[in-house]
Length: 405
Image 1 (cartoon, rainbow, N blue to C red):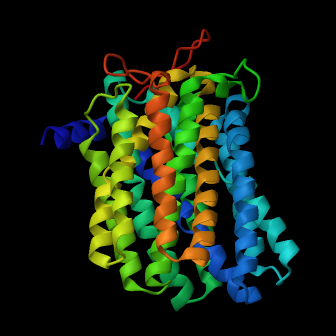
Image 2 (cartoon, rainbow, N blue to C red):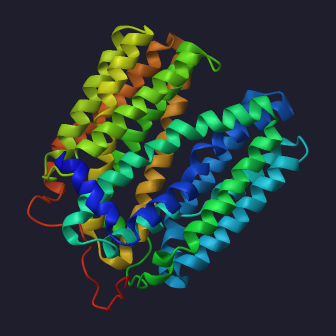
């Protein structure tokens, strides 16, 4: 009850509810684009291999652009960078929708779409410290990590339904509509215009020399890699069209949602990441004992309880360890780590599924999470202790204008 009241008070803070809703809508295409592109390119070329290459090109583009476009926001302003990237990304997806079945052309367009992915996640997590009081920041990160599960629960269902029941062209056009509509809502939000990121005085990439940022990037790579391997295993176990696959994936996300909301008021100490990754690792390890739908659902519900809380630690430790002028770039690197982890987890799981069967994917997921747990334990001194301080960024010497409600 106390946690619920805390979130209710948080959402009553001027601008918080609006910016959360806007950024979730702007990021909704993140849960739709991969499936939409996969289904469209496969139908266009008749090859899942070709679709995989186009998605790989898009992922490489995203991984490259994340820290770069995030840093640009400190130079040219959030609105300019977000408006430019949203427009280019929408144009690239439109071009992909009506492009001829030429694999090199499709890969080039996919790379451009990934390269121009709007850095909404970096932007909103840079805004948060200027939107709420210091003591509300950690609960806000937990709420954000929890609510993003809505994207992964609803978006794949929506895009699969539209692409299979209407057409893959309609599916991609829906992605473009969300990208432009959600992007415009977020860009035009007053909070985006009121927060100015000072230009960083550090060289590009220097932020990775901060141990918490490097640890957040590595842990994010391993955690998301584990989740991606699980998703590949579930699809392989129950089939692309299996109702069970959708249910089990939803249960995994629901576990994460519940865990994130429940942990929002728990202080973040140096061992917080290790404890939360221990839950994820234990739950994933249980999946290797049986491929029964009830067993997998129960195991993944337990594993999911640690996912959003671990992500909340990532966001809080990143924010608390850098100057405000470096927060956007830092979150850009963390996002790149997660993207590479998603690609690596899916690829390794795919090879293991072909080689040893579906159980190989769950073994890979457990290994990813287990390595993350080992890293969190071995390098525990690199995690900031936030039990007696807030997660606000280190102030810059240059004055920063706060949001005035």
